[in-house]
Length: 434
Image 1: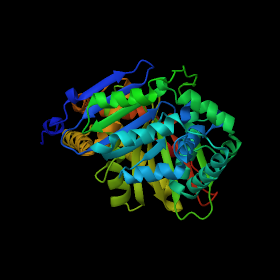
Image 2: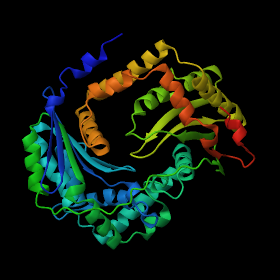
Image 3: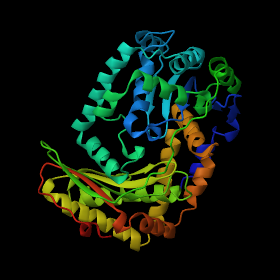
Image 4: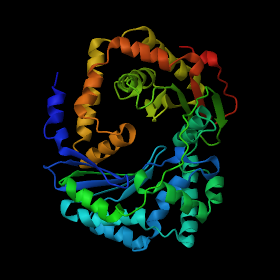
């Protein structure tokens, strides 16, 4: 067995990680990585789609797009041109929990890169003409999701699993909600979300912590903190079976899932191992059974969607309509086996090694270091060392896996969403017996 802990900690000491909180509440976390020539910078807004009211669904994502359309100092073209000249990969994205703005550049270009990203967040103009232009772009993005069966069935599942809660709504919003958003709504939401008490800056690479702190003070230090009034009610799941017809499909898209512990739960390590064994790779139980042994699907996998106060473990498959019940039966049999029979110590250890190896490989990138700093701070409020994570993984036993399998896959709590080319398909809860 490879000593992955020794590999992981080589040159990645927690002593290289520093944290400073500015007077206005903005947090700066950095990690010095001496063996690279680049810096990865991220500025994170603690606002995601889960903080939206129903009538403003999509506003967080809309703002993430619109800040790129011009600031008091730069046009949209200048933003793109300056980022390209630096060789930086300037990117932004919105999740249910937060919004991220990230760029990776050579260490000598850090100040210029910071200036560009900070300008986006501090000085957007929200020009009315640009807002309308970007509204049209986002609506096309929403239509793309509807044209992608895998993404469409995912939205169908989440909206039925967490109904009437922002976590269950599409991050980009709907055509109706996006069309209804006014400039005044956008500016008011921006002013609340993009205030220093709601911001986090993370950086990793060939840097000095004080340099990032000084830059943060220069651009954000004089901003006045505000107390956000975002709703943070935990979602309540419902175990529905939803079947929707969509013409033109060659395959039936299936997602079945059940409630899982949150990302902050101590059981997250057990959940990760269980998910990997069930459907997390080429050697997983579902891939081997559904695809390799029975040839029913090209795509079959399981995934963990974890939030601060909720979670879901979901299985995805795309199969011929005539094979839907057979494929679901195979999935339920594998889940039943994991609920009733101990995984071998050999399989458990191999899975632990797989997860740890993937984490180490991810950390070959300074962007992964930077993102890991952000995830720890956003979800836990402090740095989670790799050694601590490895210890949590190593502590999981074969008995823990049976407990978590029984906890998650209660037959009455399993939800299903199916996107099918026909209305004839029927599925009852008896088909979900495990």
